[in-house]
Length: 353
Ligand code: SAM
Ligand code: SF4
Image (cartoon, helix red, strand yellow):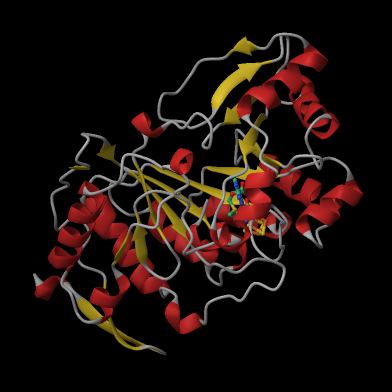
């Protein structure tokens, strides 16, 4: 096995990379509940060019570079996943577009044997520069976060973002063919619920976009704020229906956490991601790779398998496969927020939403 692997010298010393692609037959992995695990969400960095109030504290400290996976390590772990049946990858963060070499990383993942779908969740600010090169490198779609159309509120919720930059990013994504564009809004009570949601929903009348409203989830140090200000799926839906009348159900992809609806006659769709009050664990085939190389088994639980430490200690490709497969097998069924169990070790930007 080790003959398939070569070593490269980086600022971190000698890092073993690149087992010959295709050298391993794809052996799909499942968890102990029989869910097929085929979707890897990768946090390219925990750092961000914004500080959204629901995501991280303002004085957030980011991890030093040496604790994060290098490009080579990340790409090796993607190959490990692909050899275990991972065929969908989403790049997230932190803000994935601020990772150096993001275009090259996309290009390499897109050409990894077995990877069929490659998407990104981004705040969109750097898309005017990056949308085209990312699309050319093999990125297929983007989800862009936008919590309100009100410029002053946008600035407040992101702590320093300018909504004009975001609009330029959305247009750039469309022009580059990173479609269908999905827009994500985390709904925070007394902040962007009510009228702000209605205006976001109105965008779907004349745009073929999917606007998704997300229940705020509790993580890390800011759980009091998150739990006090969560707006439930039922409340969100009632607020939208009070403006537009009953929503029509749109066709439902069982594996998508978003339940899709349509305002009658609208071009685009609306979705609700009810992770807190009505979780969708049954169809969850996701695991996450944090920027510091931990396989996170459920967004809302602290269970993780360290892959980076063994990798740096010289674990073989086969040993890494065993770690990933066995870790994934122990993926918990779902969260237990109803009994007060909150994932505390990391904030959202450190996990990759
Ligand atoms: N920076 C990128 C962005 O904002 O789209 C990607 C990373 S961000 C952590 C991924 C997604 O998580 C975004 O849609 C964001 O709105 C969402 N998010 C952040 N904190 C959240 C929370 N506490 N509950 C629910 N969603 C959250
Ligand atoms: Fe940054 Fe995204 Fe978190 Fe906002 S939600 S602070 S853009 S990582």
